[in-house]
Amino acid sequence: MHDVLASAARLDPRNPAVQEVLGALEASRVDRRDILEDGIGRLRASLRMRPASPYGWTTLARAKYAAGDIGPEFQAALVNASLLGPNEPQVQATVADLGLAAWDDLAPQARRTIDFMVGQAVRRDAAQTLRLAERRGRLDLACRHLAGASRPSHPTEKQLCPTEATS
Amino acid sequence: MNKTLSVLLALTALFFADLAFCRAVVTSASGTVQAQAGTGPSRALRLGDVVNQGDTISTGGGSSVVLRFDDGQVAALTANSRMQISAYQYNEPAQSGNVLLSLLTGGMRAITGLIGRRNPSQVGYRASTATIGIRGTDVTLVTLQGNVVVTVKSGEISFTFNGVTIIIPAGKGVNAKTDQAFQAQAAEEILSQLSPEIVELIGGLEGLASAIDAAAGPAPRDRDERRILPAAPPGGGSRS
Image (cartoon, rainbow over all chains, first blue to last red; front, side):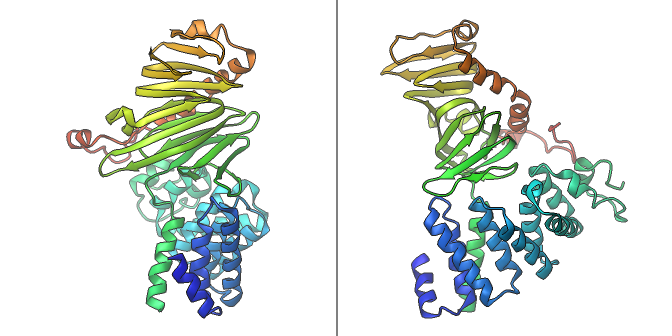
């Protein structure tokens, strides 16, 4: 798959989708620093051509996290993805997952954005988001978005957030 | 072209979605815990992160980590330890796979999961030059400067060191040194012989008992058990 995509990238270097897919593929090679860095470079190039893609920003954030770098570029990628795709389910889930994982090391602005996206994700699929938050040890940050909900609670909500879930 | 790219994007998303079965999740981490795969960069491990076959997990001073594998296998590392997941493959539908964990230095407690219960010969641990085969086991391993200390909490292990293999049952252990013969002894007897550094490593593992119990909690069920047991009531999980 890599060789086919690399050929496509050579034939059409201005195609952001090709760069993004190839970059994501290369960035999945966490066992090879050089390939991983090449992948991150391609993801950046793709985003220069298509900066309004929330999925492109989440892919860059995942790649940076996989590379062990949760600095400004990682955090900016999460914020950009959130601003561009606040209602995209996969963006919500990815931002919530990575944001809760790195919560202790996030800058205040990034925390506000992650908190907003966790709220979005809880409203869309509370049970799945609560399980994700539980895995990350951050149930408190997700449960508080249940407070005041007017709908009946799912059993998972009552189990994981007994205080906040409505009956 | 766009349709093809959409398919490729979806496939690529799978790479990142941690959907593969062959993995372990960090269920407890404190202090400095890192993972490295091959020549890739070291990455800090956080609660909920995933590690895979080939990853080497390391802990710094005053640090610890507990991993739960897909089949319910648990591995806990105490401070100043390094362990490589030399092999981990698990086919959930077939309920088969293999596990090989290599403790390079430090202390590890390991509790077998579904693979070990159904096919113990497919689970093994290494510590320095020692090889440990298991038979439904909860075992503690420490290796430091070539010495290997193993105690068995439940089940039984085969212990191979310097070409000699002995069987160690629950409640017993071994203190193997590169220049001496070794034999199975009562675990308490072994603990009284150890250096302060090794005692500290074992103490660190004992401090992880509640995190290990939590990780080992609701293990994946055998297919036979799935058929027999009624469905759990909503919200009736056993996790505390």
